[in-house]
Length: 99
Image (cartoon, rainbow, N blue to C red; front, side):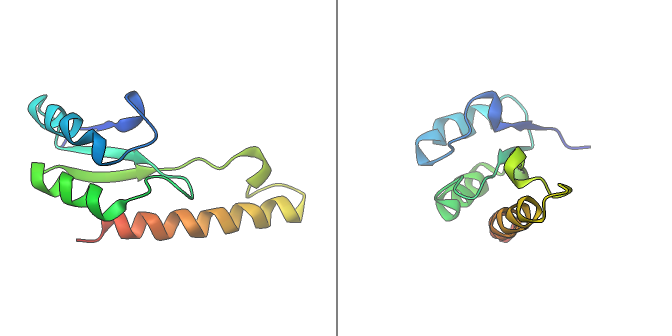
């Protein structure tokens, strides 16, 4: 079994400035990290992937839709907003997951 930590413990805005944090997470004995992804977070996926790979850390992701993007809303425009945000986030998730 692998054990990871959600980066929201420290930040939702992950970037190259967190290289030392990734090192500490590895030193703490974690196998990976979980990112919070929204349509614009993290901004520089390729550099973050490289840093994590350098430490041998796996990556997973989570995301949350705001109320105004509720996929099961009775209001079709709200549901559509949720679909649109989800598409953006899912593309970022795929990018983060790929080697």
